[in-house]
Length: 317
Image (cartoon, rainbow, N blue to C red; front, top):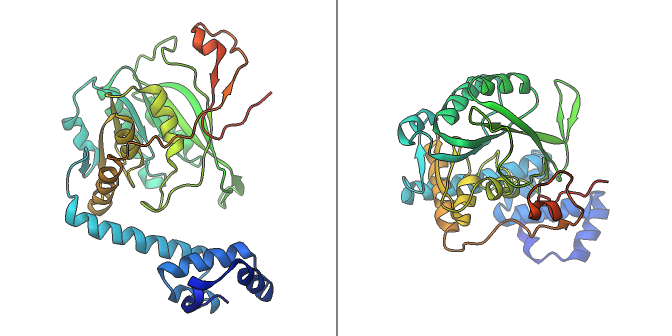
């Protein structure tokens, strides 16, 4: 096995030899070597079967996240539009009819379902006419989530995020899960005809970024819709900030941002992430490829000649 004290000097040939000796893949050897840089003792724990490689990855990531939180609590207790506490405070903080886009990834567990009712009420009151509320969620309680949001908002469309880094097993239903629903609701009444440009309802995600939050998502899936449903200077809101992905994208693309996070430490780390991202002003979305085929029924000349696809999406025939 690769031991922590020798990890830094291991070469590709040594990795291959070690992998053959222990009958494991060179990728696993590489992953273990990377973990050893953060925690040399973790290698021996894996070797002694005290912890799996997956558990070791999460253990190491959690140490990194906790370190960020402890540092951020000293330097970023407020600011960046991120408020610590329940999303109910947004009823007071936000002006009515002022928000261009709600885009969020709420908790998915059973006990969190009432939050979707409150989210729908908040979005309906604070969105501008024609504004949208996009909600990333799971499938297990999808029927109730849609029903709760529909109490206040108008259903608009269903989008999906396809995993590029492997599937997940839903043991209670015995399904291999390979996508997440991205629900699109509009402020009531929804416009009968869309005023935005052409959108794709299928986004292929990259590997999720778990370095900021254990449920962190990749930035591309959110930026695709932020770029196309808002313009710089408009207000984007995320009532479940988490690791700060939406807040960071908003800062980088010139959107104003307001959000809430109930955990003070996670909120502080998200503020630090946004503050660090501001000077770079780098667009995190890879360049879009274009399909030159005409879009049937398009009335906008630019839309008729170019059909934009989100990062990583595939052409269908």
